[in-house]
Image 1 (cartoon, one colour):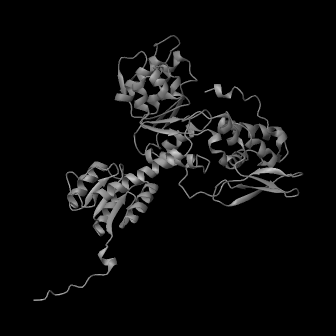
Image 2: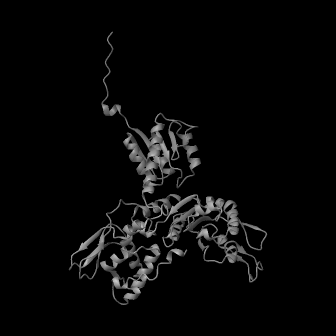
Image 3: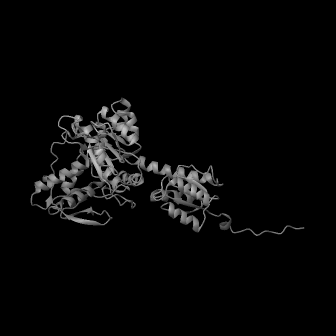
Length: 454
């Protein structure tokens, strides 16, 4: 008996794409993972949270689901347990590559884990490619190169404007009139980058600045302690404010304290509070900064300057969320999210013993680096425009000519973005009623000793 021939299906029908659902609040993570999985012939659907992922699975059950390590709307552990109970046939994987041991392990698990590794390697490579504070000491040649205008361009004599990005940084441009007598170099903005959800507090489109916004969005909703490292004047407090604003605690207080600005003898009472008569001059009891931040965020600026003796008391609070006011025997339970900042290499200080290692590891669960201005000089025109507009809220908006911009671009900026703001404010004062800032008004003053300040 001759076998009955079985017609072959078309190749496209035989090579069927598997379906996977990617659930994450991080759009960049979903995009990277989707691109890799699509290349592996997976049909990819995306969900921004647990509820949407559940709805997508109800409408069409996927072969696999990849869930980020945090969901904005549901508890991750409860979601995984409930999802396994409702869809036991689905291969369920978290962004860390775990789960599935007590559920279905699909035949294509290795492809999913490979895609996860690739997406995370891409993320790490992007961060490593961006300038990172104090990774290696900058050579004089590198500093000189960074101080030069990013893309110099000569404008012929007689032209009367230089193009700067708008305050909204939408890629549109506005013209700022200038005075031109001879050809001069002009700092022009770099090509528009891919649209990224940049936080409004952080001005700049450089890769390192966009990475800060991405990291803030990832960690803002968690209770995870954050350590912000960066040179003085690089915007560490702005990062802390952004973390608080995007968190669920944004209706509660944001309390900041500079550990370097308060004398050591008073810092403990300032942080933890004190009772009446606890020390000479304490005629009234007082609630400390930590307690006043209850329910909100406590920002410990320049944490590296905190005395070792006080670090041990802070460590106890970080571990158990309980504090004891100076002069009191009772403990008080306080719920705060801790964000710390330093301009010092705190890991090195912890190794040398000048900072408690156990406190460092408690505070540095999640790290954010704020770069020096030299590391994102392509954002100079955006920053200048931002500060001029900011000053224009109280006085007529000043404009700047290309000679002044070239002088700003050649400066080493030891005081970073804060110094830039002060230089522009000084220039606006020196210009008086003149609407235009020229080279004559750009006065850097004595900036040699700026690097020694906190």
